[in-house]
Image (cartoon, rainbow over the protein chains, first blue to last red):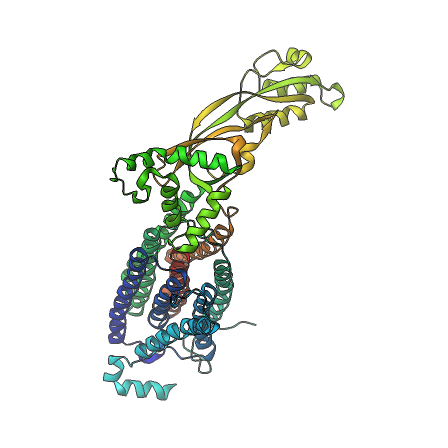
Length: 158
Length: 409
């Protein structure tokens, strides 16, 4: 974390954020539990829903708890994270593909296109979740906006 | 060459060295766990219906443990924020909370989740006839209960007193997770072929009492008579010299393991020993991780364990007695049980090892030897906690993905 983020106000802002993220993570877990208990989901849907929620939770942990949002973005770390996300998204696609009953359109024989579409859905759904979450999280912090001078000074220093 | 520790971000990387290092480490960890996750998913999608998770994953416990780990993840970052503000007392408070959460997580794994699996068994029987007969016996009470329209136990599937229907209801929801057509077909096939396993908890078993009989003593074995008598005296109060010359049984009838130990010790002293079963004793206990061999082990033509009383269902109330001769395979839910448990223990074990390592590091940081750094260089100590925090969040991340994969897939 760079110098501009060492001010006490910013730390206070962070602590608040940490608490909110903690609540979000707990809610995500409870939702997963609730869905599993309430609906008897086929494998493919369980994978998509379970892993999507996990991806959203994971992006919160990386962006806020690991405060990657405010860190200098190293290409290595960014790629590690992105590839991890796509890895899990790909796993969903794989499960849907193998299971084949994702958009079970009440037909016994499915043409190959549905399987491909299902896999794509498995990829696109979590990927868009991730992009949305990251976008949402990369809004500038209010404290930073309130103190543009300090920020400029910090920029000059580095 | 000494690499100086820099507390300030380096201009070229924008991070201080410690942080760069931990991110590299985490990147390699991603690959390690990534390989295991891929294996899990490939095995999962290739699994036959009814061979995955066996209904033994309790999502209540899983979700609880997830929240405990999330809490610890939040506490460590709050502890770091306190350090940033120079408040050591506040830091210690949150740090202990983090350690407590980690310990709770491991305790749930170590004393509840894993042991409960080690104490439950799947038993496959030799023939379909025996299997169906045992099922009838085990579930008869409940099935005939529902015949009178008494459905207070909520066993709706037992309507009409049809055991097969009742068992199907249990097995399709418990073992096949969802009651789809595929799972019904899989159940029917397993039921008709008799390949279905009875699963439950061994409430009691009959174990052999062994008679250890001395049949002779080899004078040319290189053991003196005095030494042989001394070895014998450990097992018998009787006149050792006479026992050695005329042979005879040791006074105490022991269990198989003690008998084997006696056989070995006496064999070393030049005795020839014969073991035989003199009777069976009913032991009321919940054995841990038995193998098939233990039940069918042959002692002079008789099995080591004659019969087991298996409590079916979660309640263990539908008790049936199985003879050793009928048992084809018996296995606790240990890694050897099936592919699912193999990968399950591998992944959760590796994750638990990370949690355990994290606890050790946190304790080190809290001891005077770790805290000395705080008094020497506050910023360096803060950075150390930050990098540890990154590792800890990663452990949390792995669990966030493990939770849906293990508990709802």
